[in-house]
Amino acid sequence: EIVMTQSPATLSVSPGERATLSCRASQSVSSNLAWYQQKPGQAPRLLIYGASTRATGIPARFSGSGSGTEFTLTISSLQSEDFAVYYCQQYNNWPPKYTFGQGTKLEIK
Amino acid sequence: EVQLVESGGGLVKPGGSLRLSCAASGFTFSSYSMNWVRQAPGKGLEWVSSISSSSSYIYYADSVKGRFTISRDNAKNSLYLQMNSLRAEDTAVYYCARPTVTTYAFDIWGQGTMVTVSS
Image (cartoon, rainbow over all chains, first blue to last red; front, side, top):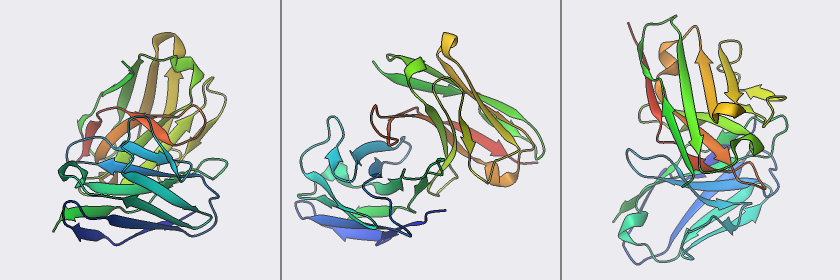
C-alpha cells in the first residue's frame, strides 16, 4: 500500500499570507495526485488533480506542484473561506488502492 | 446539475447489515466508474470500493473485503454498497464519489450518509 504523509498536521497562517502544504508518497505515484479541501460538515471538494491541474471553478490562488514522491499545494493569498482541512490522494495504483493523506488543518493565525 | 445523493445510513448493531444507495443525476452515469469513500468521526478519508462503468471490474479496500459488496444499476442511475458483518470501526460517513473524465481523482461527491455501528 502506498502511504501518503502530509505535513504539517496544523498550519496557522494570517489572511492574505501564503500557505504551503506538503504531501509525500512512500513510493512514486508519478503525477497521479489530487488535493481536496474539506470544511466541517461538508463533503470534500476537488481542488487539484494530475498534481498541478486546477479543477473546474477553483480560483487561481490555488496551485499544485511536484511529481514522483514530493508534492506541494500552495495558496497564494489566503482568504477567509480557505481555512479548512486539506487532503492529498494518490490514484496511481492498479488495481486501485487509492490512499489519502491524514490531512492538514489550515487555521487562522 | 450534476448530483449524487446517498441514503440508507443509520444505527445498526455489530454483526448486522445495511445497504447504502447513491442516486446520480445530471450526467451519463453509465459512462463512469464509481466509488465509495468513508470518513470516521474526526478522522481522515478512506477509499472503500470502486466499480467500473459496466460492473466488470470491482475492487475493495482490505479493511472491507469479504464483508462489503459494491454494485450498480445503470438503468436506475444508482450505486449501492451492501455492508455485512458490520463492526464498530465501520462507523463513518459514507460518500459516493465520481472520478473525473480523464483521471481517478474524485470531482463529484455526495453529501454523505452516516453509518453508526453500536450495541
